[in-house]
Image 1: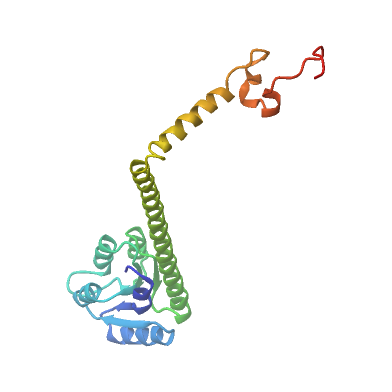
Image 2: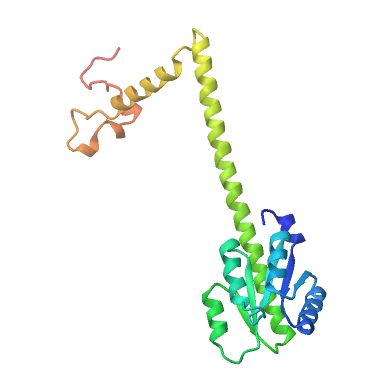
Length: 221
């Protein structure tokens, strides 16, 4: 998912082989204001994941056909690491749910669940997806700005070089200015003959103190 418009058009994918559960969950999510896609098998879910923009996946762990929701979870995390997956389980054994979290599931919901719990979990997953996309967009913007600054510097240097080369008045002007600046720096930082310590060198000498002072015995002009 590359931009904010795609995120706004994306849907929550509900994957469950139980048509009753799948339909009830889909209707609830629609009432919450999200677009919804439903799949009764893992193959149907794979097709939708390949063809549509998906915001969050809500998948049952126990699925028919020799595969389960953990298999789909592993595929999603391998292909779309930022896509959050909420796992549903009706198993009283917590081991599958713990394994799902280890494999990268954002959260799990135990059946039968309260819709308030589903609402809260879905809201957290959606907010996280929004945050990740904003962070990615800001990073891309900063990279583009850095590239623009670098390009501008290169253009200015090229223009200065062209001007120096074409004008007999400004030829090698930039190089002369740099050389003069280095000479002035050496002069300003030269050790003072009267300095009693290294810290009293010329770098700290002001322009006024660098001028020769009038001797007290000199006759007035």
